[in-house]
Length: 365
Ligand SMILES: *Cc1c(COP(=O)(O)O)cnc(C)c1O
Image (cartoon, rainbow, N blue to C red):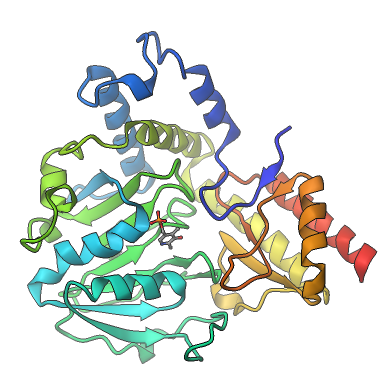
């Protein structure tokens, strides 16, 4: 059996997907080629591409007036690509700052227009303190002429997740960075102008970015926008203006099939809830460990936790590795531990982690 891998990203993938990719590595379905060796314009790859797009559209029930784009550059590139394409209307963009990722998004967008922090959960200036809550919507100060509002749906480092989406004036589309929780539960796509996600958390290999964008937001890129990042050019060419990350798209398609075979997003959500509840309950009942996040907005995907006595961190991590529990070290900016429970992490993996937590506490408390 393979160890359980709690990496925040690139992250664990379903074993069935890796196995199928291994079986098809040298010869994809009798074509005599690896998917890596196919022209992106071949009929073989076209069928892989169309199947992946169609399955994703089905899983998320993406309405017909939204395009799905398969892009490159990851979440951080979208921090530039989104303003390059969307800020044109008024030159202004507003941001809800809830952690490291949304803060990065604002700083990047600053290059392309007038940016504004409409709300923040930061209680400190300078020295980094963990963020533990979400600012309530009544406190958001959104400019009525913002071309869009950006939020990070799940702050991967801080472990904070939105469970209720804001209602905005009709002229302000909502943009969400869903990199670390896309496909973890059903999502009402019609609430958003644009959804983007790097693939390496919950979808597949790094190098692929999924963008789901409402059609009326396409076609307004700033003149300086690189062609490969202009949503209109990408959409008009079915994501093949330049060579797309073909192998990553193939793996993403297998992951979409796997989610369908699990029963779709409702079933996936139930499993994700069970996993997260199990781990939070274990942390909360212990006085040896703790998670500081407000229970209202605790992430189901990324669960940071801290040993009360940080001098035991190294022993905790090496014992975990020996027990087959990999990559539990927290992000360097917050320290401690972090367990990422993406779709591909089975319930048994979380049970195994909880067992280890209890055992380590017994030996060291
Ligand atoms: C990982 C992550 C990113 C960064 O993605 P890159 O692919 O490294 O550019 C952006 N946003 C969120 C929320 C993330 O979790």
